[in-house]
Image (tube, rainbow, N blue to C red; front, side, top):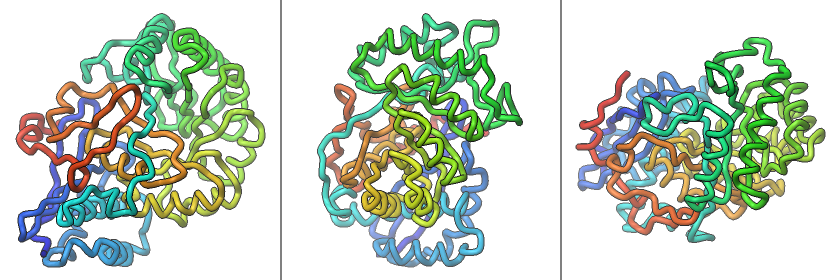
Length: 391
């Protein structure tokens, strides 16, 4: 079997583009993966195009050898967008090999340790503040709307939700994400009193809506420095959170934040490869290591999870993408023994289901493993053409 073509396809995702990679072979077997260029990965497509020629004519089933070669070719600029390009190629190669064997990817990687995966509703209320018009989803403008969103989580069978800091109650409802240069408190990244008050009000509305038995998480992203994370975490402690999610480039600072709050801490979704994760494990920086499987590649992600397990640390996939990436993360979640929970975005563009041949099987807040070969789904190229990316 030989690789004959590596190409990219892009679909409209409303406020972002949904990106897919296709690897074709001379035996008619095709492998797919989803990557992401809209959020933090500008230039990934160009890097994929640059790396692709070295794989044409090679046997796609030797994915470890190909990943080692691609990494060596870009060793002096490893990580970042380079790793995202390599991860996209790795995942499509995994799909090819599993399809050639006639098995799901998880069988090829050791077999599943679970047949269903607990999900949490991610960006709950968040997208409904910032992207509701373009996505065609209900708007959130007030705390009453937050309460209603919490009720919807329960009604649809989810047992956990994650939200972001939202500034509501005025004429400009918005997300509070200064770490990404959007809105208030940039570039200082200080824990302003209004933001502390806003998250307390928001969590009170969610907790009242969902009751004591639904888990709630808050993602603070890169929005503060060490002092601010501690202040925000302490303000949220009365709401019995499942975790607080914090991004920090300093493993020791993250360990210190963890030591100053009673809330479990999740982190590391923006890291690349075992070498990036190692200092965080060595410093016991977090309770849950979040791993982005499109960025790292599922095979590399499992190696990170195995490393985490030696430090008594659980893992969770970073999965705010569309259905194909959800399938990729599910195969990772099926095999990793130290899984905590899996991220999922129910709020998506209305044509998301059309983009794949098999949609994820989600019931009662859990995803059941796909049983088809490869990822268990493929991209519907007709639907991609019907919803072209708006770059």
